Image (tube, rainbow, N blue to C red; front, top):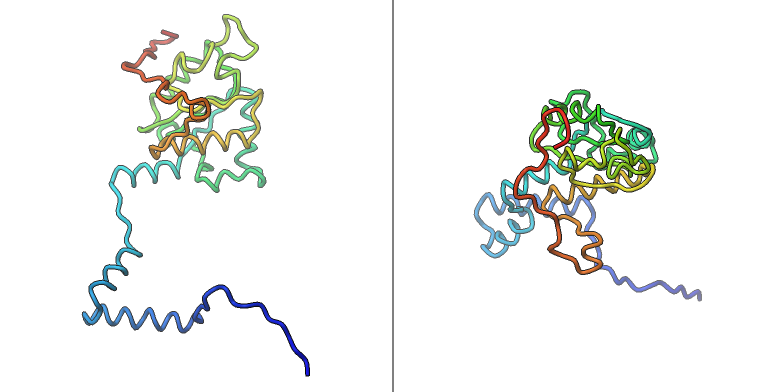
Length: 222
């Protein structure tokens, strides 16, 4: 006589797919005929209907479909291109692979590299032509703070002429860092910004809040 040991079934048994379909069809007929109890009807509706506000739905759609501008400045642009085309860094997972060649079809500009003073007015003009609402990512140390180029020929930080939403450090930052910055921007668009170091060091409430637009440009830095 052979004795076989079998493990106890700890998970509840699931109905076959055909049986589950029949149960759902039967419940649907009950609802159409009005033969279902109010409690079961309320449970059915709560499990299948989600409620939100129009603003949250709009922000969710905007966060998951940013259209970056086809725009590059320096060596960081190579890393930005790698984020799009390389299979290892597929930006399509986050809906950010649709780069547009026209600023009138884009809502995100990535400053990928150092910004020369002569490029400030064209960049600002391109930014003004973009769709509203629009966002800015400063990619790399050169775009964020001029990096090693502390001279008169380069803008000492992108925040001097554009309202930057996300800064990405590095020289140059890897494609994974740019994807991480896009994820942080998505959280910010949805109204759930990541406080980052402020949360780690208990510095909530120290965010910069602009009471006016300090970036008035008429062909140069303010």
